[in-house]
Length: 388
Image (tube, rainbow, N blue to C red):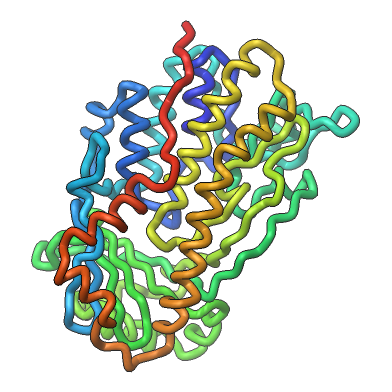
C-alpha cells in the first residue's frame, strides 16, 4: 500500500490487489514505529494520521515474575514522534488507501487474489488474478510481490527463501479490557511462558508465545487448562478467561524467519515478508516492510515513469535493503536462541537475570533498544517526486 501510494504520487500507474474484501485481520501487527511516522510526515500526512484513534507507548516494559523492568524509552529517539504508536493495521491501511485514491494513477482492487504470473519468455509481465466476476489478466512493467511470508507470486516464480529458524509460535486472541487494568502494553514472563498484551482500548489483543509445534499438545489438554494457564501468565485477566469460548477464538501464528538470496527476477520484485519474514521480536516486521517500500519507490519511480526499468534497478533495491535486513534478522535469531529458548518451558525463571537489571540501574541504556526498534538500521526517507 505504501509503495503504491508513493509510486502513484510520482506519476506511475499502479494497481494494488488485496485478496480479501477488507483489511480487517486481528493477526496483522499493531505497531507503527517512529521511523514509519517520519515517512508519513514526509508525505505530508502526519497531522491527519495522528487524529486516527491509537495508543502511544513512550516506554516499553517487561514483567518477570513480580518485577517490572522498563526496557525501551522512546522519548529520546531522533524522530518526529517520540513514541511507539499502537494502531490496528487495518486502520493504517485504510488511511493510506484513502489518501492514495487522490492520485489518478492509483487503483485498489479488493477481493482480488493473484493466482499466477504472466510471462513473456523469462520476463514477468503481469499477474493472473481471481476477481469477483472471474479471472482477469493484469499486465505491468513490474510486479511487486508484497503478499507475505507465504507469497503466491514468489512461489510461482520458483523463488525459495532460506530458512533461518524460529523456536516458537504465537497464539493470538482477544479478551475484554476494563478501566482498572491500566493502559500499558507489556510483555510478561511467567511459568515458563511469554505473554503479551496490547491495549486496543475496549479489549486486549493478547499473544502467548509457545514452543514451536506445541499447539496440538495445548489443545489436547483442553480449553479449561488453557484458561488456567492464561490466568497464571496474565493474572489481571483471570476473571474473564471464560471469554475464550472455543478454540476458534485462538489463532495460531506460525513464526518463520527466512530470507530470499535473490529478491528479484526480470519484471518481478519481492519486498516485505515475501523477501524476508521477520520474527515478532521487537515488532519490527512492519517497519522493515515500509522501509523496503520507501527504498523501492525512491529507486524505481524514475525508471517506471520513464519506461526504462531494468533488472539492474531491482538489484539496487535489494542492495539497499539487504544490510538492514540481515542485521535485524541476525539480532532476532540471537535473541531467539539465547533468550526465548531458555525461557519457554522453564518455570524456574521468576526473577530478572542480572544483565536486565542494568536497565533499572542505568536508565540511559533504555535508549539503545528504543533506537533499534523505533528507528532501526538504515531508516529510509522519501525522495520520490510529486507529479500531477
